[in-house]
Structure formats: structure tokens, C-alpha cells
Length: 404
Image (cartoon, rainbow, N blue to C red; front, side):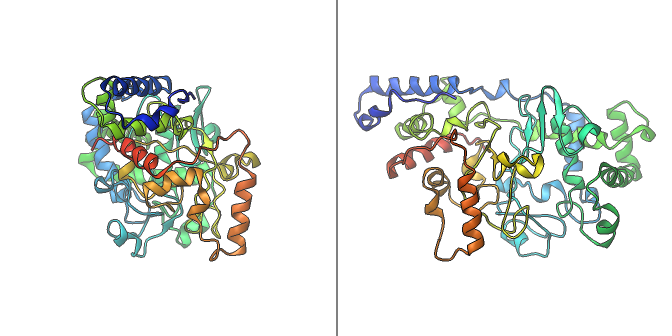
């Protein structure tokens, strides 16, 4: 992606109170955003039907849709945390409460950070989860379902997975461990059939659902639970007007520091090399040397990221670039939630060792870090070191991407 180079030297002059120069920087910022794929929310959001979105809201909040637990989608995606849970690692089935209270309950730990849901139903959002285990490539959905994907809509496929994910919405008890812990589509179908049975048992809800799709209740399938959730996402988590989007349409202005932070974002900081497009993500996979927190997807403090899905050694420790909508409100950051402060998250891109306490690291942790370092490709850019003032201005710019 394109990033600014020609105006970086002018940043030192930004304190000069020249109206013409300020206008020049604003124009440069707008041009850089457009060149890097920025689009206003109205050109990104998907259409939805209220009747189906209303049903989707019910399913999103229903604990009946956790196979043998007491959780729901909304247990880990809360308004108060801008559609995340405020925790480093998610707490799934058995979890009680919100935020730190949930962490201290007896719930099952899900060893990755909960991603926010903003823009997930957008027309151009095609790669889902930290490891991209659901994506659209050449108009074909790539997922754990293989050639048995329930839909060619990647969001529909992605929404199938949490309901069959052990520890997330399925208790890892003896029955599950012996009968369903097979990592096969058949096991997923068994769980989905039971969840569909529960919905059909609620005769009023089943009638509403069948009516929304002009079906008989006997014709309902699990996908008719998932599709309303997609409509709910399109309504509830649609991208809204932010201070930055208003700036891009000349409906509001940014402060001097916010503009300067945008110049850093698209220039010296090289943020836009990965954080591009309407979602401020290239939807590609990169190695960011944040510390690992928690057991990790591979256990013993390890998470091999994209590799777990592709089994390609070149994907070791790579994770999808996270979108930046409402980024100031969705801490902690990183695939394991190991970085709590947005300032540290920025510095960790160009000075990752500042996030580590080498005196307390075990030999295994040092080895894991070394493995990450040697797997960083030569093509991955290394941003320049930023001054304290530049980091501060960059944070001010990132705050303009919030819309709640």
C-alpha cells in the first residue's frame, strides 16, 4: 500500500501557525487515506431486514444455543467493551459476569483475545478470525468445513463455528470428549441438530423464524438460525460516522495533533502498509512480536497462528491484521491480549523488546520468541522509531476512528 514520504520532513514545521500549511496537510491526509482504500461507511455497510435482524438479536443473546453450557454470543461481545469482553483471553462456557469478574469465575478459558464485531457484515469483509480460518478466495469459501461448507458466504460460515467450538460454547465434558471431540463435520452437525431442535421446541419462536423465510417449521435448518444473526450484525455492528469519516467528507475538521497523527499513520509510522482499506486492515497475515499471554492455542504458552490452519511453515506465528474501528475502546490488544495500552501497542511494532521482561522469561519463552523472530519475512516492513510526540499524535488520530 502507499504511504507518505514526501511530507515527513515537514512534520517538524507543524507548530507553525500557517493556515495554508494546515490546509495542505489536511489535503495530504485525505489523499493518503483515499489512496490506501478508505471508503465512507455508507459504501461498506450491507443491507439487512429488520424482521430477520430482530430474530438474530434473540439468537445472539440466547444461552440455549450453547450446547451444554450457559453462555451466549453476547457473553463475550458486550456493548460496554465496544463489542469485545475487555479481557486478554476470552472466557467461554461456565463463565459468569463481565470483564474481570468473568475472568475470576470458573469458566473455560478460550486462549485468544475476543475480536470486536464492527463491520463484520460489510460487503468487503471476507477474512475472519485471528488465523483467517474462514475466508473467501476466488469466490470459494475456505474453512474447516472443507467442501461441505454450509454456504458460499464467508460470514455465514464463520458464524457457524462458535456454536461448535469446544470451550467457547461447548463444555468439554466426558460426553463431548468421547463422542464429539473428533474435529469432523459430522460432530458439528450433531451439535447443530440439537440446537435447531431447541429452537423448534419454542413454538412461537419457530413460527416467527419460519415465517421470515416463508417456510414450514419442519423445513427449518440450522442455517436459518445463522442467517438472522448475519442480519443482526449488519444492523447492530454497521460502521457508523466517526470524526475521521466526517473529516473525509468535509463535514467536520480535525485538530492539529489529529491531522499530524494521520500523517504519521500514513507516513513515517508505516501503519497503513498493513492497516489499509475501509476497515484499516489488509486482511493479510503478519508476525507482530507481542508477548504471548495465556496457554495459547497450541498450549504451553505457544500459539502458531495461521500455521494451525494452513500447516504451512511460512505461516508460523502469523495473525490477521486487526481492523481499527473503535480501536481505543477495544483493549487489550494482540491475538492473546497481552498488550493493555494503545501506546504500548504502537511502540511494540517498532520496538517489541520494550514489551518483554527478559529477566523473568523461561528458556522456553526465549526459544518461542527466537522462533518468531527468525520467521519474520524480509518483506515485512520495519517502521521507524517514533518520538514521544509522534506516538501521542498517532493516538489522537486513532481516536478519530471511533464512532460510539
